Structure formats: structure tokens, C-alpha cells
Image (cartoon, rainbow, N blue to C red):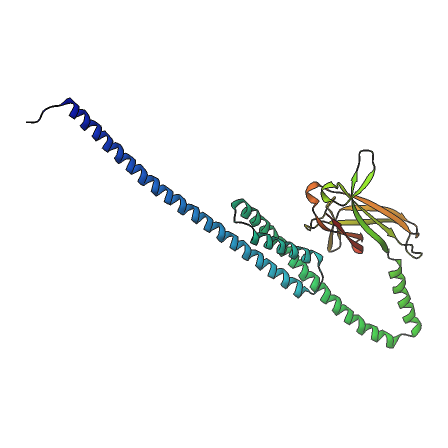
Length: 301
């Protein structure tokens, strides 16, 4: 005969509660284990996806590099923008290979690759145009040679001398630029201009050059276009454009001078922004209309 002991009932109740608690804890431990395994798996999968995206970006950059090499080789013309873009791609590829796969970093690289592809299409088309123009010039030069030979047989030596002289005069009338140089400067509040060689300390670029004396050149107002291109291949300053027949020129600043056939020194200040100023080589070009009359480089730390 069992005895209804209150103490036994209480012990049985506690034991039952402990069993339930242990059961619940066991379920929670199993759930936690499943969650941990899932979390680790997802993390591994995410890292694998990042690694895959990084490899895809490397492949895109390698293909871009190949396409630029092909364009440079096939065009047969020295296009500084093509060379600069190729160097930029190689630097980006080297940087990507040595960096850890990171979502934000890969997003920035993807955006840069997109820009490079768009730029590639433009530069390759331009290179093709330059190649066409070079071939056309070669053809026209050959045709001119044939015509000149026929002319030699039909005109006397005096006419030939006159034509040659007219060509020399035309070339001699063109403006010639020398002593072109550029430097980074900072303009103080009192107007004083101080030379700087660190990109981060510069608020303007100063370009100075000399228009050579030329007795047979035409006197009058001369509008010169100054173009400064930073290491990122961006035109600095005004970034305005002017069209000469089928050629469009993007320039940084202009200089309107009155030329009287004597040697004339000219200096032009080009406004820059902080984001445009980076370490590297800057290209300075001077145009007389569509004609490039001088170029130089500037190195900033």
C-alpha cells in the first residue's frame, strides 16, 4: 500500500519540471547548433561569392588591357590618352590582385571597370579614326607625289620655285611656341603666388610659354587654348569645348594676346579642384586653333 507523502509529491513535481527544462534546453542547443552551422555556411558562401566576383573583375580588367594593347598596335598612331588609359588599367589590376575581397571595395572596382569600358569604346573608335586619317594622309601624299611629278614635267623651273616658296611662306607664318612649362601654385590672400610641388597644396596651375618672334606672321589678336590633363586623364580648369570643323577640343583655359611679330611671354592660371589634384604626371598642351603648337609635362608629388 503506497503512502501519500507530500514530500514525495513535491519531489516528483520538481523532477518533472527539471525534465521539461532539460528537454527545452536540449531543443535550444540543437537549434543553436543548426543556426551556427547555417551561419558558418552562409559566411563561407558569401566569401566564395566575393572571391568569384573578384576573379571576374580581374578577367574584365585583363580583357580591357588586351583590347587596349590591340588598339594601340593596330592603330599605328601614338595616342597619349590610349597609353594613359592602359597604364590606369594595369595599376587597377595590380591593386585588385593584392587586395582582400571586400563588398564595398569590389563595388568601387565594378564602377571603375564600367567607366573604363565606356572610355575604351570611345578611345578605340577615336584610334580607328586616327588610323583612317593616317592612311588617308598616306594615300593623299602618294597622290600628291604623282601629281607633283606630272606638274614637274609640264611647268618650268620658275613656277616650281614659286610654289615651293609659297609653301615655305605659309609654314613660316604659323605661330611657334617655346619654353613651355607648367607648375603648381598657391595664391595667397594678398595676391602673392607661391610655387608648390605637392598636389594637396595647390589651388591653381600656372602655364608659361614664349611666342617666338616671326616677321612674316600675321599681326593681331591671337586666341590660344591651354589644355591641362591630370594623371587620371581628366581635363582640368574650365573643361569647355570648341569645335574646329570635325575636331572638338576640350580646354582648361584660354589666352587672348595681341601679337606684333616680336617675342612675347605669356602666363596663364588654370583653376583646379581638390579632387582633380593627385600625385603623378600632368600633361600641358597649347593649341593655336585646332593645331597643337607645344606640349610639356609636369610632375607633382
